[in-house]
Amino acid sequence: MLVVRAIQADDLDALYVMATQVGSGMTTLKPDMKMMGDRLNIAVASFAETIPPEERDYMFVMEDTDTGRLAGVCAIKGSVGLTEPFYNYRIGTLVHSSRELNVFTRMDTLYLSNDLTGSTELCSLFLHPDYRTGNNGKLLSKSRFLFIAQFPHLFTEKLIAEMRGYQEESGRSPFYEGLGRHFFKMDFDHVDALTAVGKKSFIAELMPRQPLYVAYLPDDAQEVIGKVHTSTAPARRLLEQEGMYFEGYVDIFDAGPVLQARVSELRAMRDSALAEIGPTTDWDSACAPESATAEPMLVSNTTLKDFRMILSQSVPVNGAVALPEAEQQLLHCKTGDTVRTLTLNPRKNNG
Image 1 (tube, rainbow, N blue to C red):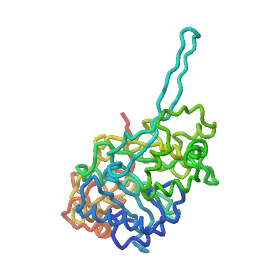
Image 2 (cartoon, helix red, strand yellow; image 1 turned 45 degrees about the horizontal axis):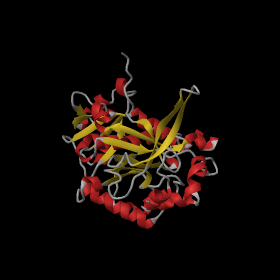
Image 3 (cartoon, helix red, strand yellow; image 1 turned 90 degrees about the vertical axis):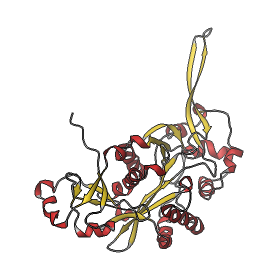
Image 4 (cartoon, rainbow, N blue to C red; image 1 turned 180 degrees about the vertical axis):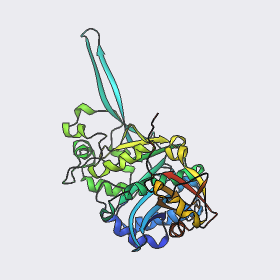
C-alpha cells in the first residue's frame, strides 16, 4: 500500500537515489548529497515547528509500505524570496502607435520581476517511473492541498507553483538557447545547477533590467513561453483542477509557466471536511456494493509532526468514516480520532 508522509531524517539516502532519476530542469531536487541533507534537516525542523513558518520547507515522500521503497516526493515551501532572490519574467504588453502613420502595434514583453516574493510555493513533485500508474500521481500531488487545508495558518495567502519548462528530447531548452545563453555564456544544465544550490546573484548581475521584446527572440523560443515539459503536463492539469491558474509569469531560464492561487479559494479549503473514525465494525456497511464505485477519497490524519495521507474507498457519512484497520495503521490513527477527507477528483457540477 502507498502512504504519503512527512519526510524523516533517515530518508536521506533514498531521497538522493530518487533525485538521480529527475533529470535537468527541476532546481529544487538535485542529486547533491549536501544540498539534500541540508534541505532534509530544514524539513524535519519544519514539521517539528522549531523554525519560523516563513523559513519552513515541508517535504513529503510517498512510501510503498510493502517494500519500504520511496515512490515519490513533493514539497511546500512556506515562503520564497525572503532569504535569496526569487526571479520570474512577467509577460507584459507595450503599445506603439502613430496617428500620423496610422500604425498601432501591441508587443509582448518580458519584465524581470520579483513580484512573487513571499509566496508559498508548491515544488519538488516527482513520481518514480515505476509508480506512474492509476491514481498514484494524483495522490502525491494533491496531498499537499489537504495539508494546506488542515494547517492554513502556516502559509501565505498566495500560493504558486513553478512548472518545468519545455525541453526537446535531447534536453535542449529553446527558450534558454534563444535568450539566456546570450547573457550567461554557459550551458542550461550549468545554470540550472547553480540556482539549485542557491547561487542566484548572477541573475541580477547579468540579466537586463529593461523589458525584452518577445518578437526579437527566435521563433522556437517564442513558441515555448508558458509551455510545460512533456512529462509535466499531467502535473499542471492536476494543479489546475485544485484551483491554480496561469497569470502571465514564467521561469527566467526555460519559460515554464508559474501557476498561482489564493489559498482561501483552493478546492481543498472549500470541500475538504473533518470526520471521526468510526468503529471498524462499520466497515462492511461503508463498503457496501453501492459505495464500491464511489469516488476515491483522500484521507489524512491531523497531526503536523507525523502527517500521513492515503487514498481510501471509505466514504464519510454524517461526519464519520469507517476505515479498515490496515488504513488506520497507515495513518497512525485509531477509532475515535479525527481525519480530514476530500474527494480525489472535483465533483461534477450537474446544475
